Length: 616
Ligand SMILES: [Zn+2]
Image (tube, rainbow, N blue to C red; front, side, top):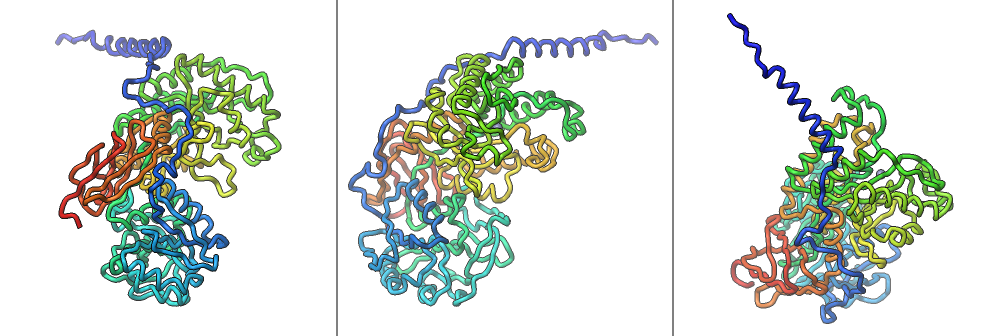
């Protein structure tokens, strides 16, 4: 029989070689990217002094916050409550319960009790309850301490048995019983960072329980209860007063109303820190054993293509921030990085995939002088002078401009999220292209990192903090995300390429496992937050600026909800909580997020929402 020597056997390796050569040629010749703004891309607004708090001078003060300014246990709660109400554009007055005077309630729609010491208010409690009974709204922002004062009103907040004088219990974790917070529905989050001291309570069947503890006690942690013609929302823990818990306060507050709207940012941003950067040389045990390749090939052929596939699948964008060298030199002159292939290759890939390239550092040394003592705490060398830091910043800017011409580099991420206050002052002058600084939302206990709010700073810089990091969000991280989705409708995340190599940050897990857990997070995020807009850092900053300037005045008028927006430029996003189903909207679009939360995209400065059913 004649043997058939097919030519195709020769063709296969030949085609393979040709493809490889083509790929290399493509990489060398450079991936083409387009730096032109796309039509419809909104830009940052020029700096301006805008009046947000008093834009609507006739907007009444709605809320009376009762607090004890000397009470150490509620200091954090009150700071965060203030930030939360400001973010929601709620007008309030803070009243010290130790002032010796009785608060006058008649002028307000809502009272927030933000002290745990009800005994001081004992003589006022019956008049507060009478006021609620006549249609007032009352939020207990923190679980009160056991006292005869609290016992005297416990039935009115929906408790049928439980609080004695001395019987607080420890409870842990949270379980969402309703979808009152974005992304919470059905979740049980056990975490040692969510420990509560709570009243063990039995509630009236008329109480609507939104959250219980995740442990066997299933202690109710947050419920609402109608008292006569008014409504009470009760928080039965001392754990929600931290910055991570602001979303609970915002949800609890809005539950007091049948219809309530507040502005949100509506953006989802993913940062890749130290990307592009020089590749760590050599091999890594985890990578070699799993993929049989060195670190450089792993990033190029596995890590990046898989991250890119996730971005395509879930339709989000990356913002990478450049490190020029890992040299620890802090004394000028600063040698230019000569090996630019990798920076160029990944920088262009970020841009062609609708991402953004920002600045991180010439090297990885935080901008702090010796006198601050900060760098030492993190085992970094100190910069000898301000000029040295500034020269390194120039070098980084020059380098990135050279490798990615035409790009603006408007976003800066401080290395290790550390930026000393003097450097924060000079940075925008030294790098005038920088319009956005992205550090962290939640600080470490020593407050050593550059902590931010989502806002427009007085020097015009947009502060766009990152809320969470890493490929494996644990339960406390998820708790934080749910809070920020509810308060700001924001996801802001960062990861490092070398998290994969780090035994700590990667939890000694293989990349396959990290990627799968990260994908689980993405799946949950985008299914929990329908309508959440995927953006680069710069685009996110545009949204933060509109949000930070927006003034809101809203009320029911003949059964329709009218929202008037001040400092409205072109678009705005709002969260609407409503017990009634919206049927029409003027001035924007509305879409459902959960059973009582809706996202409004405003296209005009006046929005009118109407609802199903009879006007109550
Ligand atoms: Zn870094």
